[in-house]
Amino acid sequence: MKIAKIYLSLIIILLSVSCNENINKETTNTINKNDIMSKTTEDTTFTKSGCAEINGINMYYEIYGQGKPLILIHGGGSTIQTSFGRIIPTLSKSHQIIAIELQAHGRTSDRDKDLSFEQDADDVAALLKELKISKADFLGFSNGGTTALQISIRHPEITNKIIAASALLKRNGVLPQFWEFMKNGTFEQMPQAYKDAFLKVTPDSAKLLTMFHRCATRMINFKDVPDEQIKSIKCPVLLVNGDADVATTEHMQQMSKLIPNCKLQIFPGGHGEYMGEITTLKSDKENTFPIIPVMKDFLKD
Image (cartoon, rainbow, N blue to C red):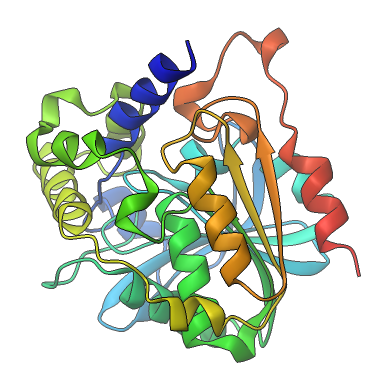
C-alpha cells in the first residue's frame, strides 16, 4: 500500500513541476509595484498584496496578519493558495505572512531564462529587500523547500529559521523511476487542480503550457546540491517529509545529518498531505494539518 502511495505522489509531483508567465490583465490593471490593496480570497483574507520589479520580473506577493515575518514559498506548478491555502489562516494569527509567487508562477511574470533554484533564491532575497524585511523565517514546500535552503546558502544574513518541507537536494533522494516519469510526463497528466488554479489567476492556456515545460525542464536537468553547500547552512533548519512522499525518508535522514543545526519530522502520508496541499485534500472532516503545532514549536524564540 505504501509503495502505491509513493508512486501516486511521484506522478503528482512530476506534473506539479510547472510555472506561469505574466500577470493577467485584470491583475495588471489593479496591482502595480506600489499599488497595495485589500482583497478576500477563496480560502482566507490577505491584508495587502502587491507586485514589485525584481531582477527583470514582476513578482507578486500577499501579506497576511502581523508579527514576526514568515515567508511562504510554494511548490512547483503551484500558486500561494494551492500550497498554503489551508494553513495560512492559522499561521497568520501569530506571524506576519509574506506569501510569494515565484518566476512564471501564478501572477508573477516570466523572464527569458530557464528556472533555477539559485535564481529563485536571489529573487526572494531581492523582494525582501524591497519590502524592507531584513531577516525572516521561511517555510518552503517541495521546490520551494529547495529554494528556501538555497536562500540560507546564498543569503544567510536574511535567514532566521528555515522549514524545508518535502524538499529534494540530491538526485538519489527519490526512487529511480521518478526520473523516467519526469522524462515521459505530458501536460495532459498534470493535476487538474493546478491547471484550474493557474487559469483562475492567469487565464491564458498558452502561458500555462509554457509554465509546465519550463519547470519540467528544470527537474529533468536537476543537479545535486553539493555537500559543502549543505554543510555551510548556519541557521536552524526543520526538515519535514511524508512517509509516502516523493523524497524518501532515507534522503531526509541523510540531509539532516549534513545540516549542522537540523531537526527532522516525518509525518504519515504523501506529498504535502501534512499541510493540506490541494492535491491531497480529502473530505473536510478527514483533513488535519499536523505540521502546524510542529512549526509553532520550532519557530518560537
